[in-house]
Every structure is written in C-alpha cells, then in structure tokens.
Image (cartoon, rainbow, N blue to C red; front, side, top):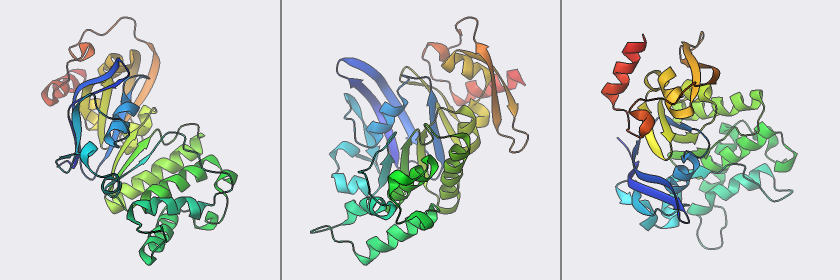
Length: 287
C-alpha cells in the first residue's frame, strides 16, 4: 500500500524542466532512499512531496487526495519534512526547537497543551537528546543538532518523515548515529521514511526500498539487493564499480573504481524505467 504517491508529476524551476511524468509510490512502513547524481531531481521531488514546490503538471497524492489542495495544517499532521541544512535562531534551546513541531496541532494563541508537552518530551527522549534538552542548539555537535531537528519532526506526531540528505556535512560517526536513529524509528514505530541519500552504501544498508533517478526519471526501483548492481551504477552514475555483500549485514556494498569508459547502452540508460522482470534478468545474468 501507499499513502504517498505521484501521478504524471512534472516539476520545473522557471522554464527549466527537472522532472517529467513521474509515477512513484512510496511503500508504507519502509525506509525509501532516493539516489542519483547531482541534478537528478531527488531533492526537487522530495520538496514537491512535502508541498513545498508546486507541480507544473500532474500531482502528488496523500491518502488519495491531491496534497496541494489540502490545508497546510492537515498535511503537517500527516507528514514532516527535514530540509537540507536547517538553521535555528541563535540561543534557541533543544526543547524550544522541538516544541515548534507541535504547531500543526495548536489552537488559539499557540499555548502548549498537556498532549503537546507529552509529545515534546517523548520526541526528545526517543532521539536520545534528554541530557541536551535545555542546551542551545548552536552549542551542539553536528550529530546532536541533526538529532534535535529530527526530534522536532517527530514531535509533529506524523507517520511519515521526509528527510533531505540528513547526513550532509557530518563526520562518519555522526552519519552512522543519525542513520541508526532513523532505522530505530522505522523498526520500532513503523514510520514511513523517505530520504535523499548521497552515500550509496548507507542507502543499501538502511533502506528497504531504493529509487535510482537520472534526469528526473526513475531508472531502477525496488529492494537494494535487486537495484544495487554494477549496471545500475554505470547507467545512473556513469561509474565503474563492483558490488559485494557486506560481510556483516549482507547488504550490497559498492566498491567504485573509476568512471565508466563509455556511456551505457541499456534501455535504462536512455530513460526507460527498468521493470522488475528486467532487473531480475540482469541480476541473474551477473550472478
């Protein structure tokens, strides 16, 4: 099933088309990773799904209704988005930041209710930020700040989280810290998570559904074990790489060696979406 989907979605910046005729269904209760080269349309699609960017044609559907025709607060009660590199006012504490997540549920003068306070404290605890709750956000490390922003998104009480490159500019330890948190939220609370990811090995390890994009078109889609192939890396990223199983998790592990020597000639490389059968045939051929 899919509560969030697109139908013939076309997006552009001014007169420049970015995405054309996109049909995409986000699987409920899974982590979906959008991957692709810079300029492939990943962040643009995410913004449209969150109703930040208005489609040129087609639409985004939430529970079967066009999301851009739904009231802002109603959308915010169903999905939360964490944009890339969010910033907060200087001196704002973690708890104050997290409390902003309750805005869609507030009435009147925005006074926090008992339920608001319960959700705020729950989100702070769920993200491991209890000991930092009264600390200014700008005094935290990169990983701690990112967890605070995720806590704010959690405080909205939504079943869906959309995250645009949640590990950007974080060191390796903080990247793993954030990804493990998202994995925990998905496994323990069945949160549907859609994230734009640059690190393909993070995408393959933590996501159960992978969408590989090129020029605003889905070339490959499915479970990482099916999608993460040498051919996909050639078609989508134009790189020469081997795929081996992760020695601990068994997830596909990408070992890049350089740029592909010549453009790929498969159907997917010229914009034809690979079907499930087509992907399976490729995996079998490579075995």
